Image (tube, rainbow, N blue to C red):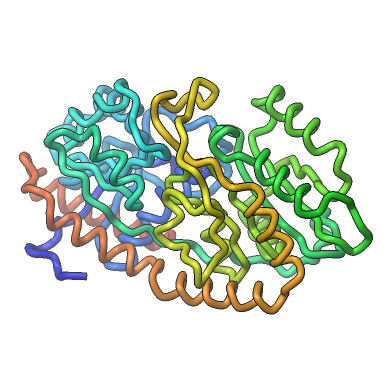
Length: 398
């Protein structure tokens, strides 16, 4: 990566859902860790409204009124950016505002595209997201940065203690209902698994479907339960598990599956790969920034119109329909070949450790900061000094 063309800014504010147990929350925390890794002072702040996801992660923040560095990175969604600008203190809107946006499909709806008027630049986390955002950006620059992938820290508990099947090759898929079940496509994972293994056999392969936020989506949960009920080797896992509990699930799995129709990044398979587990995923969208034929198993897919059942995504946009026959074949092969699983997992762990670290992500952010135009209004020397001290105090607590 080339060196920044000018000195970095004195520090940045980062607005995000730092306490949310979701991919958006993980992305926000990851950006702060990346900035810490390269020594950039950072002031994390919560937005005026929190997300509907469970807020269970402890994370120290400052009030928006004290986030007084000249550049603000917002990890809110595009459609949350307008309300943020309306509610933010003047020093946020007078400085430079960068949207670190995620979007999963190829096109933005018009009401989201209007958000480009509120920001000076947009940064995407994958090539897929960058292409999607650039289609609607107009004159707003759309850059790309790298995100780090956290290596899970399992506690070492066994499958039985986790409430998991104790025998057989264990396939695991995870999703949250707020992330849109049609896009995450657990139905496809279940269908492929049952196609691969039509009958439950003693010591045979097992599939665990871990969900979150099910209480807020009773109809979708009921549909998923009905889909799983005829298959005793498919298990639905509900209920809250903290980060350590999810890490233990990833460690207990032999194969982590994501037969998504579209993905901005895909933290679950990425973290599984960092842990050395085999990932099986649709060969489409944001996960291709870290998955390849050497470190994972990619399922071919056909890009198709989304249609009216894919709300909230534009019906006229496109996503992928994974080949379930190919996915089933891959599942059978992986279940029968532990040596191949081990080789893929080792390659995956090495790739993640080499290229998706906090430092690598931090360096990409520094380079993107250097490509920004100068901030139109700089805070006073006194305000910058106060921000520096506050950032240093917060960093000592992380």
